[in-house]
Image 1 (tube, rainbow, N blue to C red):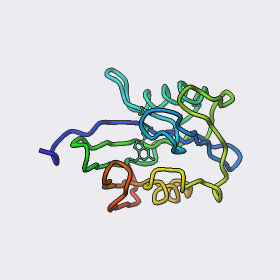
Image 2 (tube, helix red, strand yellow; image 1 turned 180 degrees about the vertical axis):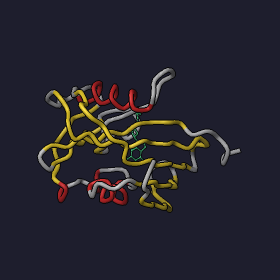
Image 3 (cartoon, helix red, strand yellow; image 1 turned 90 degrees about the vertical axis):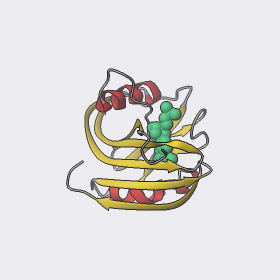
Length: 159
Ligand code: 6OG
């Protein structure tokens, strides 16, 4: 049954400006204490891209001018039968000034200073692909939610 359960679809948006990416320190909920992009669950009646734009506005206070899908990551957890399918978007152009929300405290990071030791363990593998402008698909297997056990990652021409 575990293998066939439909994944929960989520979004993750990484905005970029002058060679730096915006990451938020998650203050509550799932992933608390980790830096991450901005995102959340896709709700009924909205497309994945609409959800990505909405979560970016809610959590960072900025409006995407353009967005490009860059990756699809599937997370499998041994303590949750439902896999998560996270759609990763790159936003090179946005309007507004990022601000702190109840959920996230944002900060800009240059490519060399991405705080991998304060991020989900999958991030060290796919951020380099992302930062090189490549498209990718990945599968990640976690033990007790947080410990990465195995993974596969590939560059793809199309998502
Ligand atoms: P809310 O609970 O805030 O949505 N997310 C992950 N991001 C990374 N980098 N690694 C993971 O490894 C993740 N699992 C979930 C998707 C959760 C947010 O966290 C992302 C969403 O943007 C397991 O609604």
